[in-house]
Image 1 (cartoon, rainbow, N blue to C red):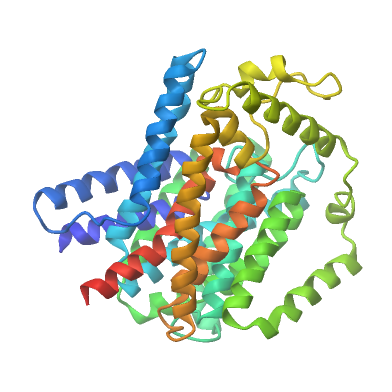
Image 2 (cartoon, rainbow, N blue to C red):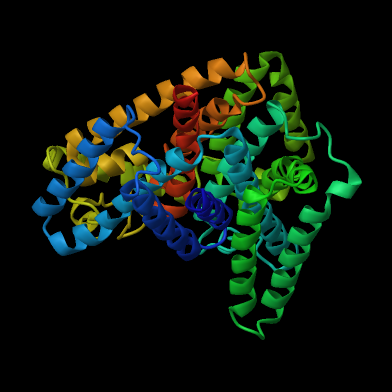
Length: 441
């Protein structure tokens, strides 16, 4: 029982730090995997097979084959190490077989999401991160990573609110202490960032505190802690939406809207008017961060067009094993169209094109197989959620989050961000953990 709680605490720490530190999240993943392995050896738990096993194994195997056929296998192998992150799916399925565990880990994720969104908003309005050349990135290294993670947090928060936010349907003032601590910590980090006088230690201390806080919230049985965690989705949804606007990242906007539509359709289709009205109000207010991005003739859009053309040429040239993982930067100059604005590109700003160009069409087929199975499982669980809203939000969260990822991935290679991939794997695991819970009942 002690090892089981340790595993859950490490998963919650991972969920809380996905949004603020990839190092901390990956460290929690490694430690959690070690605990799971030890529990398997002691026969305290079992390894859960899922319908995702076959497509995932095929995708990983084909990725390694593509690596061996790349012009620079060492570079391709270095990029392929991201396959290790898929272990998170199995760690989460094993740890989230109880409703309280799923709620606790989601609360930890929302804690990190609130922290990231709050810092992005402060950076945009107070620290000068308000131009296309300098966009708010929060705690992460790039605005694309931050906006992709916030997109998933917004959808998860909306699903949690749609299916019941926890102990209390509406937050009470006395339950706001957890949110207050979070925002105070972010304010201190932002203030110290503005002075640039104390280095990275305040941020590291905040990350450590967030990891510990996420684990504590997930493991706590106190009613006051659960009530305080119930406030998180009420703040994460509007604050995350604000941060998305400030990020000026159109792919994340489109993905978030798609994910929210899915959640609303699953829960109460008649409420779609609320989302439509919110978007209409946003367009009427016409914030500069939005109006300046409502165009398809800007340099980044034009560049994407030529990237995609080059990607198609790469696939035609090597349709079976592709160029190899991580090889786009080296190979792009050979396939670049003369009209393309930039001579080099690290990726192709489209998930499907990126996978097909680097792993060949079979690699894309295996990935599509994996995605289709994940979507079908999430959809089936989402349908169950109508009958059991208290515990059935897992399917809607996974379905909305995955749709958001795929729609945003039409315009970005968001699967290349470890933070976004880990968040997606965590959300995808929810319906599979729920299925295991029913099987064990």
